Amino acid sequence: MNELHASYRCSSGCAGEYPLDEIIYRCPRCLDLLEVKHDLRPLASRSAAQWRELFEQRCQLRAGLSGIWARKEWVHPHLQDDNLVSLGEGYSALRPAGGFGKSLGLEQLWIKQCGDSPTGSFKDLGMTVLVSQVKQMIAAGRRIEAVVCASTGDTSASLAAYCAAAGIPSVVLLPAGKISPAQLIQPRAHGSLTLALETDFDGCMRLVQQLAARPEVYLANSMNSLRLEGQKIVAVELVQQLGWQVPDWVIVPGGNLGNVAALGNGFLMLRELGLIERLPRLACAQAAHANPLYESFRTGFREFHPQPARPTLASAIQIGNPVSFKKAIRILQQFDGIVEQASEEELAEAAALADRHGHFVCPQTGVALAALIKMAARRQVQPQERVVVISTANGLKFVESKIAYHQRALAQLECRLANPVQHTAADLQSVLATIAAHAARMSG
Image (cartoon, rainbow, N blue to C red):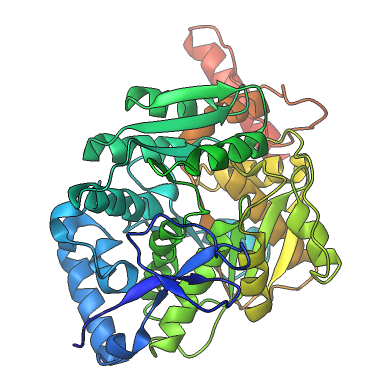
């Protein structure tokens, strides 16, 4: 195979390319975000059938114990193996959700559980790439004092874990009081300097961009397109798990919108190298309390207006000024995509319904499932179509909202599927009577 090559290029098409070891996030000409572009010619010297066979062999062997680095040629061909920082990310389950799908009249539904990862969210898939690049730059003599991020919780956990594994200092900026306790303890446990700021995520993001303007500070948010290179492998994994078949729909929760762009890039690379012949349709699902992309979609993407994000149970996507909105819009337009929103009640009930079918999903996945419920009701998704919902985090990171739901303690929400604890006397007759009453309620 000819020498592989990847570099940063302007996502809006300006001339120029920049090496992956350069600290640069935006195009110097138009200031739009950069993206990683691969030279497809040397990659195409291996046929589609050969790529499929290679990836199948590596996955059977769990090569390197990482689903990302099992596809290294498609992610970061310049990374030296000595600098690879991995915690065993990738290989996340594609779980059949037939019971939930049947309740919507759908025959083929899966949930791609990206929360099956070291820190419990999909952010690990990109963080392994970013922190490995930082380690390589430091090994080459580059002075980097810290890697920093703004976060609604999951990015900070992931950055902290991977920097801890690499022995690199990390700093995380979090909106005070707006993330779950499980998410807050993760960067603290891994030794990150953890700063809670009296602002929202967008305020944290503004400040972290100012910090990252300093040459000794490296930015770990999805403004840095290395993150998206790992996340795009979700598309490769799910197609491979479906026997190299393309789903009809992929539905993904949208916050900062890098994940939409990453998934699209993964599918495009699969098609460009001949491993698939068609693209799925994409749907981005936003919480109604943080829905700037949905509002833009309603105008045909002619306008995009950042907005103050209101509190939402889907706290990980409570973002009103997403940095990757241009990338996401371009991908959605290429994929005949749509954007749907979910109210607080809709997302809570969708998550509870998925839990009743054994999935225990995070609130962000609840947003995507609520969008699917709407799409199925209006027959935008047909009964026979194959649908994959991307679950971005483990539900165990958001138990407070689930406890509140089942205690019917969520303000102004009915919590129709709440299942309160039944307090019963410690004798056989009382237990039997309670079981009988429960059975009667369920059958009624």
